[in-house]
Image 1 (cartoon, rainbow, N blue to C red):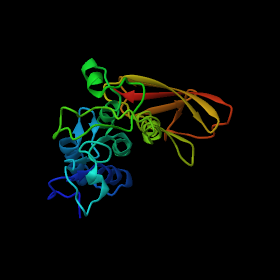
Image 2 (image 1 turned 180 degrees about the vertical axis):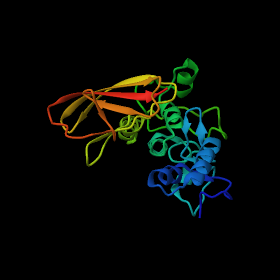
Image 3 (image 1 turned 135 degrees about the vertical axis):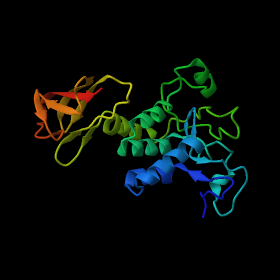
Length: 241
């Protein structure tokens, strides 16, 4: 076994944590434990590391990943593709503030010091940023400048399905926003099954639970049904303050 608490290196990996959230394998108690472990052992100013501590020598039973330089690629980098799985898992269990905080770390800045440390402008999400933050903080955060990554489709899912909560299902479009608690409003345009939806979300006094209105009519279950291809619809979402 590897990735266990007795290991000096490679003690914790991010993917088991993210997929435990997504699959529903972790109950509430285990969710709290794994999220705390991620915050304490894997989170850095530049995002969530793939594993920690990074391997510094070959370990035969684990294999090739242990041969990579500490903090690069799969050996403890902030591997954004895997981080996006974890963030999507956070949205799946309603942890919207933690999810957005980690999502925002995928883009450099806004502080100039952060941009300089990463060596990249916030115009794309790279495959990874250097990790091993607790072992080699001087080089941590540096961008790989690799744009060939599967990260972005998952970031799109985090934004559309999670943050803005406009997720398709068999019946229609489920509207269940998870805006960060310090966001008061958002405007989204969503194309869904050929229909154009103009969605406005805002927090209002006196609202105790999310209210969804399709062209002025309250949708009690929040699922937009009967949308016609080519049609345009206005959706208002009122959220608690």
